[in-house]
Amino acid sequence: MQVSNIMNRNTPNRIYTLSKCRATCPSAPMPFFFQVLVVFITLHGGVNSYAQDKSNEIDKIFNWATVETPGCACAVSQNGKVVYNKGFGAADLERNVAISTNSVFDAASVVKQFVAASTLLLVEEGKLSLTEDIHKYIPELPDYGKKITLDHLLTHTSGIRDWTGIISLTAGNEDALTLILRQKGLNFAPGDEFSYSNSGYVLLKEIVARTSGMSFDDFTHKRLFEPLGMQHTAYRTDMKVIVKDRALAYDKGSKGWSMSMKLDKDRGGGGGLLSTPSDLLIWNDALTNNRLGSFVTQKLQEPAILNQGRKLGYARGLFLDTFRGTKEVWHSGGAAGYSTWLGRFSEQGLSIALMCNTDAMGTSNMAHRIASLYLPATTTSTADNTIPPIAADGVDTVILNLNSRTGLYWSETTGEPLRLVVDHGRLRFDDGPALVAQAKDHFKRWGTSLQYMSGDEFTVNFLFPDQFELKSMDGKTTRYRRAKPYAHTIEELKAFAGRYSSDEIGIVFQIRSKGDGLLATIEHTPSYSLPLKPVDTDTFQLGRMLMRFKRDKSGKIVALDYTNPVIHNIPFTRLNNPDSHL
Image (cartoon, rainbow, N blue to C red; front, side, top):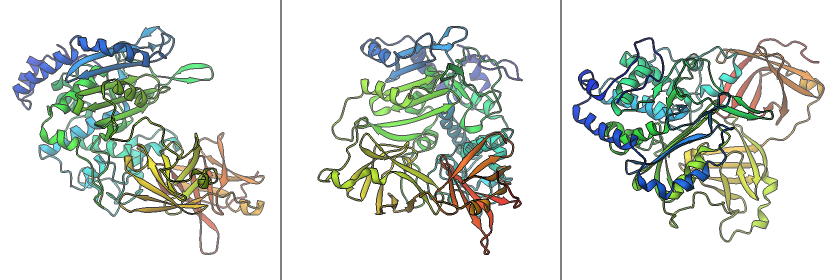
């Protein structure tokens, strides 16, 4: 039973057996490996006969995947036994290679639970502390004026800006850690809010490497993948290395399928894990049966708590949810064209791993369709896949006038934009949860959405036709007001023209007036300009981004703050005031 050579390394090829590891891995007691051997045989053995009850129904979920399209590999286990393991579609469209049960995919953000487990192993050994200021481990981080702990990083409550919201603005040469170290401000005070941030896990990966004295890929190989028998799993830092059985990723455009692979630098703690569905089931089984030890297993699944005492639907590298009335522990991920979903329903002994080489089909939806085949429907909880009502019982829908509430709103405090839309007659946040009317001007969220409060309840109260307050469970209130088009004169527009520089991102915005509008260009991409749509006198919208210009006491525009959904108020300083108009 050998660990596959999933990627070439500078060190000799690693081929291990369990008996060899007993002699070379003193940190792992022998009984652990006997347990792993049983799990390995169970999870890598033949598909259990029970699979015949559900396999045809699962197959139908993947009818869209053919030999001429990318597809997915899916594995399901019940009570530790594999009951389904199949591949669908093409792993390589150019060479007509089919996806098999051995196909290797990029697991993307599913890696976060492995980063968290690695961190917790070192905490358990006393080499790290969850409550220690992270400057102890990465002293070159800027001084934010507030203590940020390892646990803040693990639980997405640090306030550190997500580097993925910055990288698209740069020339593309900076790695994640470099961008993070440039950031001088936070989105919020540590522990006050939850905001999913890949930056925290980049820092954790770096801390694990510095503390252990090993690269992160070496650490995870020796401490996690090899002991557990995850033969086809490795963390990779060089994306150009040839990987046996790797499924290539694809996007579909107007001219058909095209390859969508990230072959540049390591993406950090938010990506880099190559694996198979059957290997991910081994990991799930290890968590279910406490094979990582009680401390690590418990912390991985213990809900995070904000400063105000509110529990989150997130632990450490894992989301905590319910589906059909049973507890669900899961994470999804997307990188380039890859899409992955991994989840457990431990109360029912069910585990599902789904990995695809296209993001054209929603893995979460497919995974829950599979789960529905095994989990009994319940009438005691909100149905997970039901259509939300427009309003609660007793509320007259005629008076709601939902269409009048749609549009772009923005927070004067953070600059964060939110868009309300009417979808199938129901008010909802764009790409977010539906809002169910409790009264004429009072709405409550429906269902689960990661982007908004990590699945926790919140309410929306319209104070005026063009203003609402979003109130979270802990009582925190953020006021949003509708963005209204403002008709600037040509002379007013010229006042905004100029060059604005940010040391934190390392770019220069050039703002130019053109006719009755403004154009924004990043100087390293001069051929690409975006129109700025006014939403207030000094605030402009670029898609889901906002620019808020700032004036000095004399009224002269001297700076701007840039905000998008994952980074707030990055300052840009005006460099000059040229006659920049066309």
